[in-house]
Image 1 (cartoon, rainbow, N blue to C red):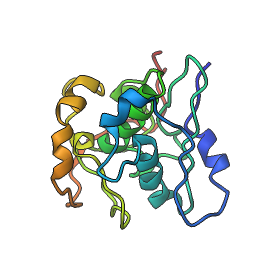
Image 2 (cartoon, helix red, strand yellow; image 1 turned 90 degrees about the vertical axis):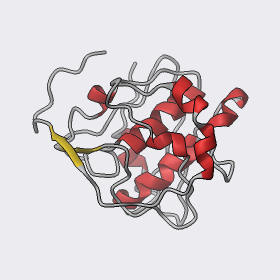
Image 3 (cartoon, helix red, strand yellow; image 1 turned 90 degrees about the horizontal axis):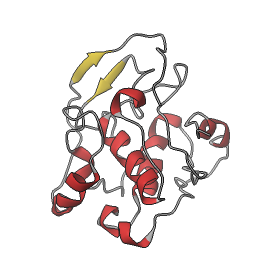
Image 4 (cartoon, rainbow, N blue to C red; image 1 turned 30 degrees about the horizontal axis):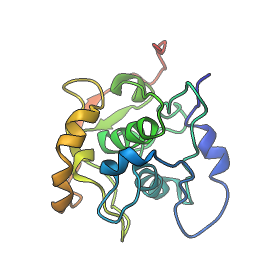
Length: 177
């Protein structure tokens, strides 16, 4: 069974002042936390709140499932970028689950953004440096590469002008599993 990211949009109608992340990581994934000891699930929830306009809960994955990218109707810059993809992939992995490829994640994105979060990062949110690593070259999030780059936490990443990398069709092709 697949856990669809759009399910979160239904749940995100809950109003609150802080981002919500109910998914939790296994202890040996502490390397994936940011400098404030927030899990990749919590950081992703904070970033997704920017375009959602209200808290965006990242719920735990059921067994044998993964987070998929946005639906055609709900695709937005906060979801269609490599930073969010990497954080959500790490969120799935740190729960002992799998994650989809970059091409599957972006299936419904008309525009994708590489190595950048294209919206202003909320005040008080620290995005781990490994989330900015290139996933487009390999086509997938690489846990080993991310773990080997945890020292990038120490670098300050500031939003910069977004660079558009490619345009994808506006219709959803068949999704490979």
